[in-house]
Amino acid sequence: MNTKANCSGCSACASVCPKECIKIEYNEDGFLRPFTDEKSCIHCDLCEKVCPMERTNAVSLDDGVLYAAWGDVVDQKKSSSGGVAAKLACYAVSRGYEVCGAALDYNTLRVNHRVVSRMDELEALRGSKYLQSNVLNAFCDMFKTLKKSPEKKFFVFGTPCQIAGLRNVLEQKHLLDRVLLIDIFCHGVPTNHLWEKYKNWIVRKMKLTSIGDIKNITFRDKAYSWHEYYMHIIGGGTAYVEHKERDPFLKLFSMGVVNQESCFTCPFRNKSSADIRLGDYWGNRFKDNEEGVSMVIVNSSRGQEILDAIRDEITITKQDIKDRFGQQHTDYEYPKYYKRSLEMLNDSQFLFKDVVNLYEIDYDRFKRTIKNIIKKMLHI
Image 1: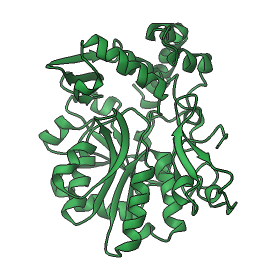
Image 2: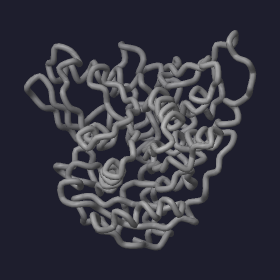
Image 3: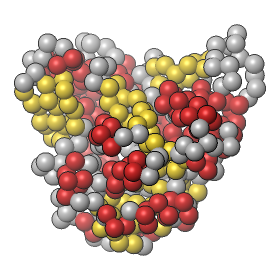
């Protein structure tokens, strides 16, 4: 079992293990973590060598090239930000690449990475999923394909830690030249305890028979606003739509108080191991835009080449790299009631509001402080 406090559950260690003696499972706090069968371990130390928290080739975002970009109206409407990720994925499939990204499994309502190769399969990868994705099976399948078929190439989307770990494994396997890496500005991943409690709550709230009645979940519906988050769930012949301040999952996720510990000191806030980083272009520049704008930071010549290849399909303008500040530039404070929060979410006798109430006063003060800092940074 990995007991490192800075472990992010990226699965690099498990994907490189020659004896396959490392499994990825939820720990007691509700986060995906590696568990090692010590009897089968041969102590090759490959797991340590590919751990992105121990070794990384991440580059500073200060050295990247910044763009504001968005796709057509359809892609903007269906995507979480400007739809650039969708354009990149479509380009990849049209050129014979396979695409690996996060998809919600409606049989289990858990998020796993999935490899797709057809246009009609890309829809499952679209949009934000504010849950920790299990990447292990998809990454291992990708390695097998790359080894078996020298002509195969991939685009991979993931969180910064997942991509950093993957890059280390690809380098170790000498496969990096056939994989384009794309990461995101990441808010952090919340405990699965929150999601499990929320699933039971939403079944009661929507008067469903079971979670099997749920047919579609949009973690961030832009029908009302790009700047405001709305949860939208369809199932049982009805729909649930609620703002992030009133939806218990989005409320606690937005507060950032039940993320995994490594998220509070993430080494990838200002660094990236990816060719391209994507996110929302927040700030004063697009404050009146409600369709969505993607922030795109290119970190490599390969990334620039791919972005240039889709220029005719997007609206894109180069920006000063300093304009990226405010995109999760600083670390989160370690939550005062962190362990207690996780325990409460895993205990049926406590309600969401019990956890929220632990932080509400402190959180409101923290939000005001951060807003003032961002305003000064953006010279508003």
